[in-house]
Image (tube, rainbow, N blue to C red):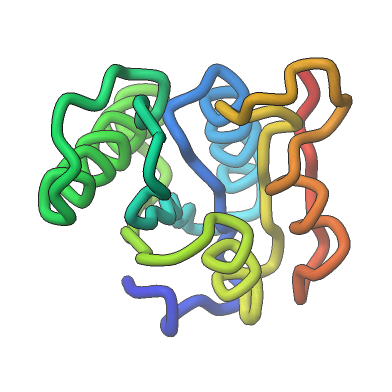
Length: 150
């Protein structure tokens, strides 16, 4: 399933390797099981601005575009493995999107029944109640949004 194949039997979930994303996956799996929905894990990535030294919380030793894409794919693969282990009875697919995370989630929300995100990801402003991606999702998504708290 790709981002263009999302329909009203799909719950899209933003994943970024954070504990908040893991809680969002868990919530979405429970909801999907109740309603017979599929889950689509969405991880958006973009080539970092100069000076960025981490990706998904890990040190970033290289700055090649392909290296960043590989790290992003690893984050998505780990989220997919967690989801499939957590609830093997729910159909789970995943998609890697190049671009800003909020934009990728908003695009995935176009046909989805729900968009689920954690309240805080790996961003740098720890004191905020909601991160910038979850806030953008709430304001711009094309479907209902669930923000899973800590």
